[in-house]
Length: 144
Image (cartoon, rainbow, N blue to C red; front, top):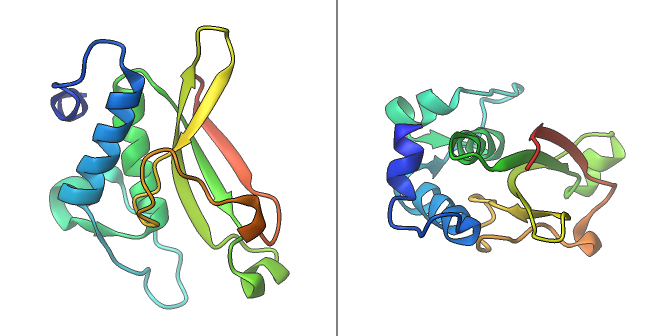
């Protein structure tokens, strides 16, 4: 919680866009270097290990780190698993995971904004449907 609040300290109160972009930028620029999982193994490490010890991880590890930051400041969060690799999709496997910050808008609707620090396309980006080889799967960790 303290780390998350320190990251967004300069954001105005209740400014979810500033918070989301600041968390994205911090993770993208300051924290994590992309590293593949070990061969023949899906390795998932804790956000604390990524942040304080190793500083390197793959997409699912980075997504859980971003999710820890988001939920620590009271924002919604979900994991999105995408089939972006044709060969893996044909085997029923997802090839990419990213985090999405959830915000409740004034009209009561929910908006999910990608925080994909691996694709490096900017805060709010998610893979466009034309790149999918199957429907994405979402796990809501905390509702906005």
